[in-house]
Image (cartoon, rainbow, N blue to C red; front, side, top):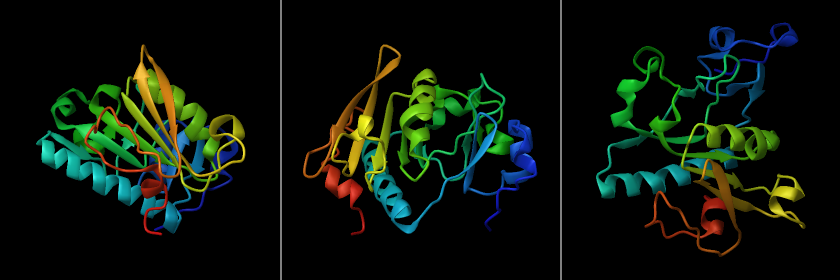
Length: 208
């Protein structure tokens, strides 16, 4: 079911509780600083997300790690009452869930320590992926963050000029992300999944 963002509701910033009451049952929306964003999951967007999910699930299973990929949950940073991210892909450490106060009843994470890896597939709201989420995921202590910009939508300051499909892999070092960009046939380097044997093109052109 798709729920349209109600302009009447968005006349004022929403709290997380208000967002959950109106949009919590729909995977299409997330809340950033009180504003509701439509994640715009196009077919190609979903193919890229599914490809990444498939490949990292193989790595998790092969290594016998107590991790899983979040399916429908939200990431609600504990230091804000007006933001609830819905990552395209988030790898959760099952051993950390006992520390999560909202997990059992609401499938909501609040602690960055519960998340081993996160990825966003870029849509027209690309500013959130390259700026706000980059800052917040780093502040939460999430060790690795992928920005899969399969359509080359990001600004030139992020992906260069001329713009082209780019996979940005952000690795946390001293509380800030160091960013490596991969394009075309370049082999990607992941600190979390070091055995991945993929090129940027394989990820960004998944299903095509």
